Image 1: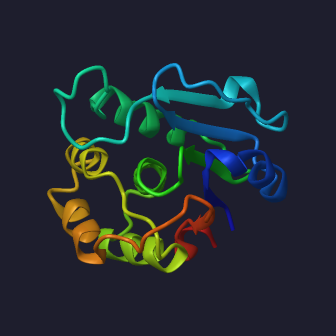
Image 2: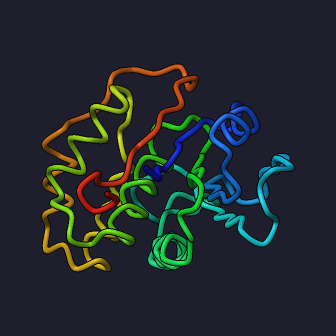
Length: 176
């Protein structure tokens, strides 16, 4: 079964090799330097310069916007699913779990939002998806508030130290 691997920046090389990922989405502050793992194809690496904030107007910080969400949706829809998709941010707790939910719904729009959010919580007790990314995705993916409510229903994740990568499987019934 194909899956989405969510990781903190510090463990992307390990996760890419372990899960044989060849495609990656990076959600980091604009200009933040890092090394793309060699197993990740350069032409299949989406880099989004975005801060982990939930509202605009915070000085030089870049709030998630429609262009960021559209990038995730388009990239996920072009993912061939022959290998897991690696998604990471600085700690693997907020931006990347939100992007994982967005990517999952982009490739499986028939999935129930509550089931997806429950699967996220089962995969990671720490995930607290970025609310702004979720709100924008809810609108862009025409979820009519269901994604927002599902993420609110699982609540804030447990405190994390940024060292807890996890795997979000795609829906089993659809992949079988």
